[in-house]
Image (cartoon, rainbow over all chains, first blue to last red; front, side, top):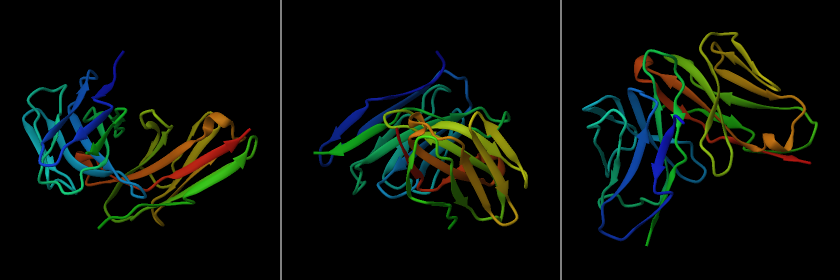
Length: 113
Length: 113
């Protein structure tokens, strides 16, 4: 089955700790995206990558870092510098040059202990 | 700052009722309008992508229209069923090739059997 997987489903972060959220896709899509959802707000773009070894900051990139070493993987690290990390995180991918639709994973909920 | 707005915030209808939601978006530098359905504990599912003024799309009992001149889109559900219960998200994309989506906060639809 083709699709996007995110792991873990729930992640707990201790104060001062960096944590990494996984996003993998087997759709052979070039572009990948990370969004954050907070209660009462729309999804906001954290980082995006249009091709391997390249990525751009979105609207709320501060306190996050990403890498894109492989086409199928776009991990997001939530650093200890982020003051309010508790949120729901969604990863998406898109096949560039072939329509505009982004396809989403099931999400990871990050909680702070 | 680009702002996409959806109304109403939530909606409760009876099975068999027809309903509609509104998405308002900035017209300047507009590229495409996306509708997603997001059921609890699942990934957001793409419903429609529309780009041209006057576009109309249909998928079963769900349809959508687009007015790019005045900056709004309507989503219609005919004869609502309990399985239609979900959050319906709209998002505008601006800036062309990068496909950065600006999401509204969603309309939560609950269909009572």
